[in-house]
Figure 1 (cartoon, protein in one colour):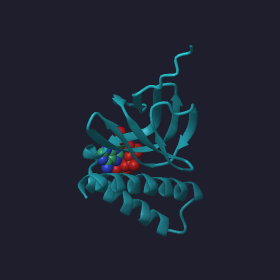
Figure 2 (cartoon, rainbow, N blue to C red; figure 1 turned 90 degrees about the vertical axis):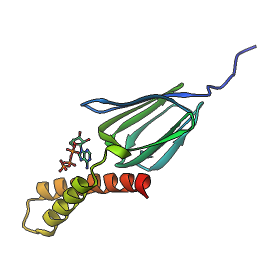
Figure 3 (tube, rainbow, N blue to C red; figure 1 turned 30 degrees about the vertical axis):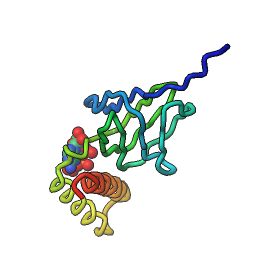
Length: 142
Ligand code: ATP
């Protein structure tokens, strides 16, 4: 008879162009997908999704980890989840003051209506990144 035992763990990698942010055996992952949060448990169907900017969480043993990921892709295949993000920071690594300054800078740029469209778009994306970092940091710090 065929073996239909489901995996009990997922091998998670979170990678950015600069570094490997996480490499862990986990029991649950939540990813900010382009169309909303995606909850992934062992045995999940294969999936490829674009990432939004936002908080992601995973559970390893009894520890829950929170990170911020900014754009990219996530692939679920078999017992592996690979997150390729443009940037990613663990919640405890986030410099809140830096993110608050980045948010203010982006908001100021967006208020200047004479800016070129391309600069406005860059400011809009910078604002989303800063807000995602602040939201993630607050999840950790309450
Ligand atoms: P800033 O204007 O403050 O540099 P940014 O959104 O332009 O912010 P990115 O270009 O997205 O920054 O990231 C550059 C590097 O700095 C990445 O490695 C990212 O993980 C890190 N980084 C950016 N902001 C923060 C922060 N608030 N806390 C910790 N690391 C950060």
